[in-house]
Image 1 (cartoon, rainbow, N blue to C red):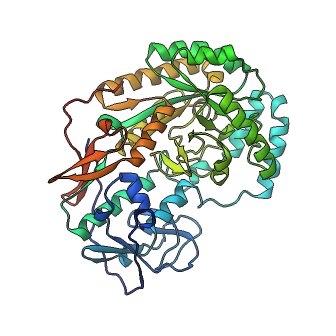
Image 2 (spheres, rainbow, N blue to C red; image 1 turned 45 degrees about the horizontal axis):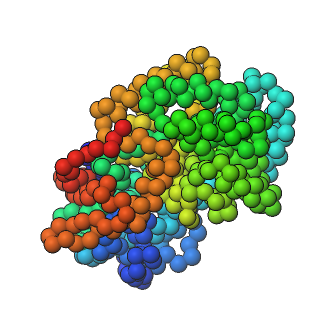
Image 3 (cartoon, rainbow, N blue to C red; image 1 turned 90 degrees about the vertical axis):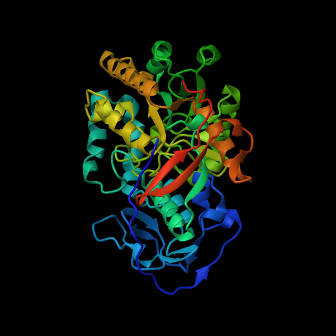
Length: 476
């Protein structure tokens, strides 16, 4: 597959003090190196003196980004008058001097640092809602949720229905590196095994007893369409979790993940209580053999994840316009939060789509899939067995599975369990490209599945080209 973006000429810069980095872990393009797994020598990016400027939104060409900068001004929110720092980029071949730290910018999105703090009014309202939620009829709950989502279409950031700001920024910086270095191409380790265009994972959050009891039927549907998935269970929620229930999932080739603690929406309210629950969550993870975690209702504080003993998390939406906690990581690729791999939720949840937006088709999902695959990303669905039991929703879920099977038949898409995607991303993060005569080879565990790709500038556009494979087996 070829991926293209526009390349525009750079503009004038200004004299500044330059910060010089050499070690890959302190390289100013560290996040770019981690994204592409390319040799650091190809990214001759230096930082202008950013000093201690305040953080805010500004523009780098077509992309609204958030952080500090050494030039212009920064705004508290995205708008039409953002300062464009591309005019302050300096190219002094073979080096490019940036007025912002790209690693800082990318991590600001991945950790949602651009989001404002939750107001005390929202905190009180949320606490009151979850106290009375168990006794509320579903129609009342949906009315409250729709009221909370009012005005979401007017949100200017993140971009809807999928935000790929991080991917755009990485591509722009790779183009800048090509221009500055004069290289004809930059080698990197392709994102997915066997050269797949993208990856697909299905997850099922089991919220209540009705969902638990519907898991067998949902597994039957998944088996019919060869869709493996994880079932995310609440260890101390409103339903019991027996070993026979868990074994019934594992024995059919699905996997178990932990969903929150009690699904009361308050896991991250207070640090001391979170630590108490985290100890119990870790105990259940060991007991269930679960490698993955997801928080209830996608409430999250990434800076607290370090006490959770999981290999991967999947709690951060790509663009959270329709979630109680707004924000989003603005990427369709996995990334690391400490030692944990984050598998971002990149597709709208089924409950939101069918009940809050009252959609009666999978058109929005198709649109999101198209954008995600356009950036060779991860398609990550949340579908609840609690709601699929409804005949109308079941039909739409089957429509989705039929569409995905047709898509996988025509595109090289890696459909995998979350734990498999986690394992691949970890292995890829340790692979290295090394010289092999006039060519390159990949070293590291799992490298036999990895593919060398090249980023090139063709007609002022960035093009990805994959090194041919003798065999591309392993796709489902």
